[in-house]
Length: 593
Image (cartoon, rainbow, N blue to C red):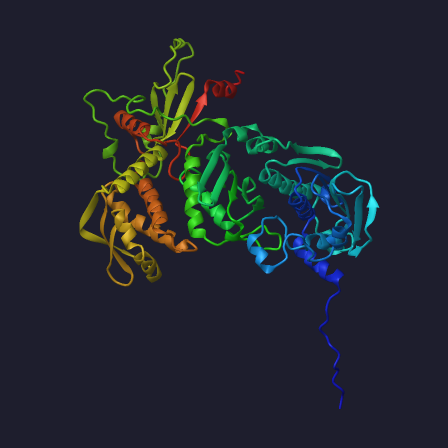
């Protein structure tokens, strides 16, 4: 018989190996080192930080601060795993007010780089220093340095070639590091930052700068000057910051910054709330730009859910979401709604009839328009203009007109063009009418005066069983909107009534859109969210379409109705309703300047 080996195959890993494994989560790239070192400095009460980078941070990350500093006893433990001054008991996790708390960052960094700490407290005659070279911690020695701490990390991943091979180009790594620094500079108003790369100045933020000044320094004056402040408070919840007009929206979230108790983070709840606040103002495929700081008691949020602490878990999302949404929607509504490229959206006059007075005895007929869907522009819109003779006399110069007056031209049965004293304005007739109908539906809904047109013979539509099941749960909510539905079998729904503002034949399509929206979502929307979605769809279906020819009185009625709205610069989906070309724009286009 062969003897069975009794040797143990499970063993405790050496601390050096454990730290390198932990570094795989904590230290992904130079930007991770920048984050950890700066957070240590901020937790130490620093008011001025100098951050020096070389080769994107792969060769050197050095952070010098004017914080409290450390003595020799603390330095002996600084590179030891899970050694921290920020908590002592498990219960302390519920009241964490610092950026770091686990005590694993410096140990992880030291295990994959050549790290050094140089620190001096106010009560010490000189500074103290300690090194960690790839996991080997040296003795604490006396040194010379001013008050504060310098944390220096060189040759990241020098002893882990596989990790170093995955680093990107210097420009990429630098970009990631600068993103971290920008977020920290915005999160910690009252702290100064000086950042250099390869000994060249990248940016500096003076300690006295407020949030708006910091945004201006980091992202430019155009954005900073358009930002609208946010300030709201509800009990222990406080929201502050700045939001940008929809025209600054982006295809990514790099300018969407949230800070929780001074901690930059990316959170799905907060991101979803911001998108919801911009819904109806912003293109649904674009990301808003905002810089927002949320303050709440440490006990109401769990920051110990991710190795890098970039994600958190809120203990009461149902209270937080409405608070944020109300404050953000109010701020977004105050932004200047202008289109990209510097072409401004100019509001119509805010009193009825100022821009487009109807002729006496004429009744605007925009209200009588039926919904029509055209395959293309009407033939009348494509008629060529009459040719002018080369000898035809020039038109006499026109006297300047007031900004609210001007001739109107419908182009391609889609756009309305009117002359202004300083240029011209182009209106998207569908987008503007959609906004008018949307606001009218919302007003009727709020007042409980939404008129319903009931069908003598209900129209039947076929749906999948799963769709019928989803729709059934929302029948009471839809009824509030005048959409009266009833089940007529396992896969059949009967349409008994629709809002009078909605054309009858648009009903089946609207119901299918509602079902599709309910089925595609990750979770079922609440009543308010569903109501808003349906109002959007109804407004779109009821509006005049591209290709609809409008009579002059219909154009006047549309523009007069828009003039009575508080917001008429975008359609409910966020597309602009009009753009303006100034005389300067036209002169540049024709090379006159």
